[in-house]
Length: 342
Ligand code: NAP
Image 1 (cartoon, rainbow, N blue to C red):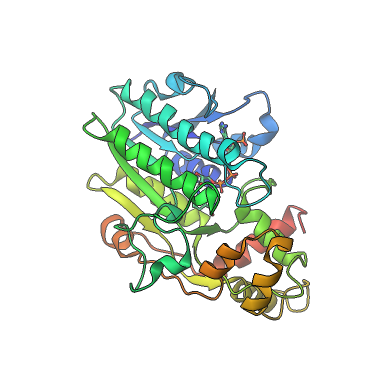
Image 2: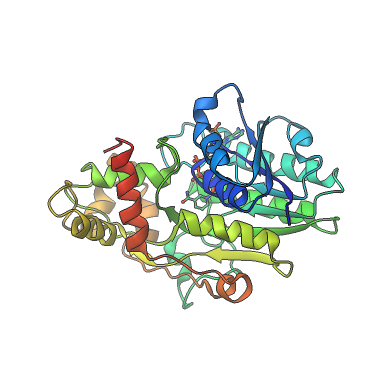
């Protein structure tokens, strides 16, 4: 049945696919953007709307402005809160650039929802990094799952992970004993084709760096969970419309290193990109860490350390199915080429 739903951060990489999924499902979708006049930032969604059964309406809201989500939330039955800065490097002030928008934004959205009796459920785009901080946190367990919380990140160590942990915790506090449910989607590293040509999400910039030779002389052995952006969008819709959905959902498929990804790209387009052929030994990465924008603590606690993610709750309770990493990367490669980004 057709629902009125709100997606925050409509200009983002993940939000675009969530909005497409909802429009294709025939829903009335509202989305918030920071500046509605900048239609170039969401033209791809106006194009999607034309091909879909649903209707798209644009609202303005800023994570840092109190009450700015009120108008968009009023009348919405489901609120998907995706907006949050996603940078793991290149920011000046972690508190101001990452933590404040993530935390204050989540509080602002949840406070608007608390004032709006029509809202039935909030689906928060949290992250696997609210579940774990460093790969080393897995010590002694077979894998990470929804019962785990990140207890090792801080403003100075893994600040993006810290921002997502604080934001999700604040959401659970604000949703306690309210008229609506909260369900969180906790994806690992999201990859796959983008609906726009924008490349600032770390999901896109990392792959562009890899394909353009940024790691040609070697990559660190960094293992991450990965998941297709289209599967993440599907998880958001399932979390909203599966009546029995409850709690947190770790959304993750294959674990892979950057070298594993490079090998998939090489197999797909032999001798086409300046891809890395080897992993740089951990002691060397540790030595040069500050020069390549990493801290030595990060290297010690992550490089060469395995991480595994248990996605069984998403399969058992939401009926999730996952695309292979190969499909994800081949499709992302095609999109980046077609959009002239390579
Ligand atoms: P993205 O493309 O960079 O999108 C971030 C969105 O947040 C943009 O729409 C951006 O709006 C909005 N935003 C940032 N600061 C804002 C502010 N002050 N006020 C209003 N909006 C603001 O990143 P993404 O990869 O799609 O990430 C979306 C969500 O998924 C985030 O919550 C992220 O933490 C989560 N997540 C991502 C991954 C991943 O691997 N990509 C994994 C797990 C979880 P502007 O266009 O105006 O900047």
